[in-house]
Image: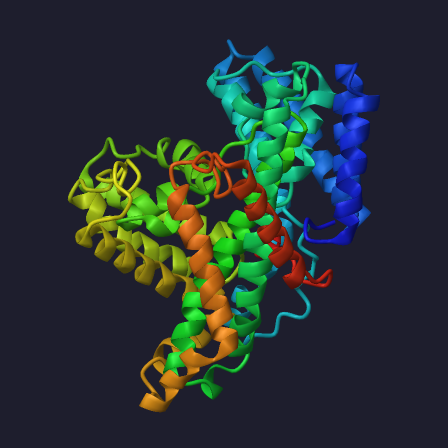
Length: 481
């Protein structure tokens, strides 16, 4: 089941009503209903994948109890924690990476003939997300950050909570699990804000991402058939497509959780207003970035080692992050590209130069800040081309094509009404998010006190989103990860 489907439009109000008005008086029954609704949501694609999420949930829950039981016997606790990590990463590796490594082995030693060793397994939707969420729980129990829950229903709800199940945010047990351990009371203002955030998420997904994606898919399906201007436009549009798609999903997920009295962590904080690549990564896919920081980078020594070791740690993190996105050399290359952009900031000690939002006390950025934002966006967009390409030769073909077949006549493309409509909606999105860049999402309306104006904006966003809506629209990009 996807957020951008008519099925979900019927599913959400039914679940909402049952959650508050039927099961709301009893916490255990309410949590059990969350698990049931989440399994229906996830099983809508293929019920057989429910077995995997149930296995991940059960063994992570058991491991937490055993780790805590043997907390004074660190060796036993370490082995239990390691066993759970191996089990979960083993499941993830089998479904997501086995065929990649098998094909790579065949290419090196078998002349590319891999038919006998490939499994052709279907990748379960969102497996990387819920696996990392379950792992963070057992690791935090081992580190003594949290005590394990003995309530298996609460834990299953934590792993499977449907709004963020298939594409994040990747939650921590320290934040989400306690919310299932206490009675929730519906908060009207929180619910209204959730609806605003949902609406903004749909706008970014349907009006920005899907509309940009039509042109991007056309160009990437025939790169040699397009001149440099059109390739450059496709690169820029993909940058907005993936942002609208993924941050739109996060907004819908976080907003939906608010309807159920649950607070999820922020996953995007206007990343395209970043002044350098380090700031970008503090604002893009925050839940994954902080996950790798806390569970991989810091255990490796973080920034407490020599410059050379810090550089190595940084390279490893970006390569692992790239590989997390999928079994393709393009993702590794994308990770390496960002590592190379990040390393100069690490080595010069400037990686934490910009912690506050740009133009904090001003309406507009100054000329220097504007130039930094544009440069950072260009560099990120170059990386997105590698990310979007089917393979490295296609990415190379794209970059080579940017410098061929251009003429003054190509500039007429920018007068095309279809291009102009995309540009207008992208500008609207950027304008709204710039005005509300200090807020959690674009439609916070904290700066709009006039009720008539607020409702006019709601109506306009709803109308535009409905005009562009198609029940057969593409799935969210990050479902494949």
